[in-house]
Image (tube, rainbow, N blue to C red; front, side, top):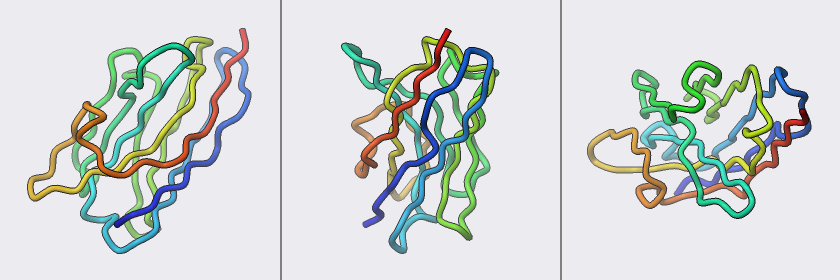
Length: 126
């Protein structure tokens, strides 16, 4: 089973950028659909972006669609989330998640993902 470790979080100013990285261990990364979720204090975990195991399909939450970009490198067992034009409302803990299944699906639902990283804090100051 794949294990996930996120990095790249930190403090950014409004309008700034951050790049999150999720490093996966294990032999199943290339057969896993990947997702990024975030959770702000007092709120439920929300879908941010997802990418299919081949990298050919991506999906975004409405509130990040034109600002964030998800990508993956199966040769490095890594998935990325490039976040541009950050806003204070993007402040949250960001989680990487992996989903295996017979049929590739970029799910927006957290329960569909079996494996989660520990999260990385992103704080955007106004």
